Length: 457
Image (cartoon, rainbow, N blue to C red; front, side, top):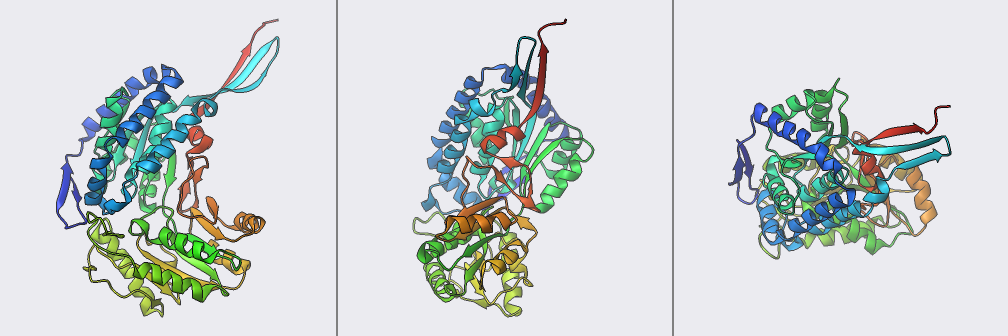
């Protein structure tokens, strides 16, 4: 039995029976049987159905927002995820005709040559709990549009999301066999991957989870897309707009209780702005209202699970024991469990876990730097590489620094955002592959070459 424990009060919010290995295999087989007919439909028809499915999810938003608060703790005041969900899915629908068009290589009187994008077949999407709708649509929309059948497995913490998505898409005419929500335990998931039940697997989650996916797929040649951990840095240069940098980077560190794939986890500030940056950052965080996410005035809710909060507390305590300074006094609502005081740390170093390991919680360490070289060295001193946020008025400088930062995305004067026109990708332990953009379609299809000789003499 899969159980979603609400971080609001520790109660069981939802539970579902996991499929047996046999039932899970039957679901994958149904998807495979239905996929060819789905892929044979006109591309525009698939695009229109996916657009309609996205809109049907939006129609559920009044129910979805409090449901998310119950499942993973995000305050209702932020209105859920439909804005990003629609932006991402809509963009992939917008570019589908061009992204999936044949690539002409040449034609004359004797031969025609081109490359076609062919769907993999059956795609398994394993989605995380922190942004369960937006992370899922990154792959679900382009996979369906490209002609794949999709099985969607959500994290237990957001157990009901896949049901809602499947119901919405089925209501507009996407065949039930083509898009299935499945409840799977880890062992059954690994067994199906090892048995080649899927032609491609997209996983968003922990580094450990990514390793389990790779191990399950070993020797099967099943394609994998992996977005794993992050420790995203921000770098504030001496010519930055200080107020904008503080507001954006601290929001990027604390929003969603710090549980963002591309959240800011470490900040490096030029020495000339350091004291002012820290003072402004502390003022922002001191003003946060920690509390029940169902309350309309709550800024920051509980972390999704007590064990996640425990890891953040451990990192903070270890850093303080090693000489770090905490700037935020414990808030009255901090219960020692899922409700955790957001924290700013200074006098930190890369010897501390809070500056090395993924925190995935409402804590950020701030360090002083004297120049670009020092900042680049520190930004690259990480086993992760998802995004980096650079703050400067000089775009050429940002490009020069960005070229040397080991990361998947370089932001200038922005942070914690996913632009669907760009490839969402990472390096090092953050994973492999890429989603969204034209490249997202390339990863969800395979190239097939055609050499058509018109004459035989």
